[in-house]
Image (tube, rainbow, N blue to C red; front, top):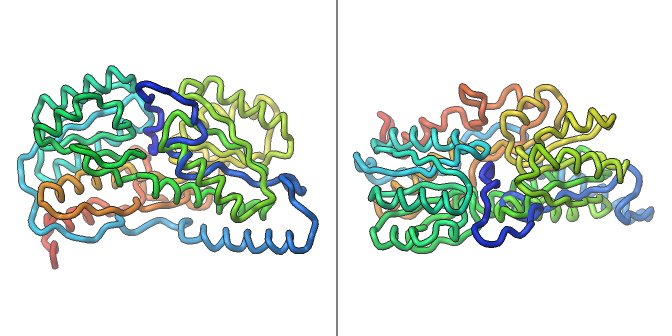
Length: 395
């Protein structure tokens, strides 16, 4: 998303480098704050100082609600009747991308809770593999197909065939609009990613007391990720006009290879840097080791869509703040959306529950048995209640 987690997916025709402006980055704006001195065009006037103080205060107020764990799945409208049993849904499992396998596991669990059958089709992120997997899914004649992070254009002619067959397709983590069989693109969409960008920006501005000099590393090739960068930068500019943000677009193939050295180079060029921001957790792979080897210490690190390594880094106090992206609730929301489509009731358009995971809170986050972020500990019970599957359902 991730999303956010799903940002590594390659676009089929043009692979424009919007590393810093796609997928999660576009929704969250490029992080930009100035150095402890007055970098980024700051002035010494009292009005500028007053503006900075009010911006920091506003950032602190904005970020406060996101520092504690959410308690609600974000939707509260129950179904009219229990889900019809026996339907087949197929998931395109991007198991080779970030948390793709984890998400697919929760698709299967949500389908089972709804009384449905689930078929997992494992694919890679190449356009040909995606189209082949999607075509295979359509040929199974399921009631629905669930995907994540895959641009509509990458599905090819199979989407038109799904429309003809009356197969509904639900996606999370996209900037596409609904069209034909692709009836719902609201889950982990632009609005939620924009919020993530604002949350991280508010934390950076507040923690730096309006003196942040930020190097932002983005993956512009993925539209939903770029939303994060854009939102992050805009929010930093709003609350901290004197803060400085420099964006460094990366390619998905740079993750763990070229990106660590790109980080070292950026910090070396601007020694006043005090924050490093990444639009997905995967992009920070190898960064701590590279900084240490270069003798660069004391930098604050954070970003969007924490994976297991980022959660561990927070526990080790080597990184500072990450958006907790709840894969389980995203998966259940997709199944919930299909249930409502089959029932003929409106889908529920609401952002996923959100939390900033910090060194202070990482020890108390709700996580599953593998350590992946869940967010809302009783999310499964809350969905079952909405689906009228518990004794108290509807009561």
